[in-house]
Amino acid sequence: MKSKLIDGKEISKQIRQDLKQQTEIFQKETGVLPGLAFILVGENPASEVYVKMKGKACAEVGFHSVTEVLPADISQQELVKLIDAFNNDDKIHGILTQLPLPSHIDEAAVIESIDPKKDVDGFHPVNVGKLLIGLNTFRPCTPAGIQELLIRSGIDPAGKHVVVVGRSNIVGKPIANILVQKKEWANAVVTICHTGAKDLSYYTRQADILVAAVGRAEVITGDMLKEGVVVIDVGVNRVDYPESEKGYILVGDVHFESAEKVASAITPVPGGVGPMTIAMLLANTLQAARQQVSD
Ligand code: GUN
Image (cartoon, rainbow, N blue to C red; front, side, top):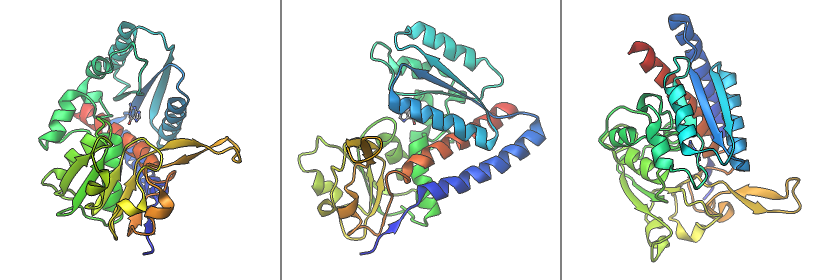
């Protein structure tokens, strides 16, 4: 089977162009520029790259953004104090604390200190709860990006079996919550499984749509998939590759070469889900600014 490549880079470009236009209109109507604050703690190289890319994307659509880089040994109290300052800053409509945080900091407490109205990650328990019961709220960015990829590729999950591999609060649980809702571009039968399963392939072989969010390089191979499956690969894993300029390459959680032989459609890594996460962060920030202006 020749599989279709789901081009997240191109789709995210279209979304960012739409958002740029919407931001101009919003600014003309309200005099307000959507504002996003990034908080980066410590020196995690991957997090540094992500935050830089997110800041650049903000500038491109015309948002105001600020980035606070804090030392790895900052106390939780100091971090929460900074978040509280952003909670009370009218120019800031969204706050993003890049995860993971250093181990001495209680991640849950930090997330809870963000005003749910400014929680553009959709990680605050209030927003997680709203998402679960189908109320309007921020969809976490990566799951929102996955749903948007399906919509813009004309792949309707309604009535299909979506198998999610991975149970993180950032991707696995929220994408399952989104796609199981009795709503348009959802209404799927959803199974969540994970690497603790006795036989992972028992589940993955049943997938009409497979979402791989495991965080391990190429653990899902073509022989674990059903002919015609749609593969959404969330993984971004660095593997050593001395011949490349950087000494490593990025691969997904899915072994691309074997999976593309059985899939009807598949996302590449990089250039699939990754760029969509950033586009949806921008969309959530504009949504936050709209809500806060009308409050
Ligand atoms: N770390 C990995 N993905 C994310 C994300 O979507 N948001 C935040 N805040 N941290 C992350």
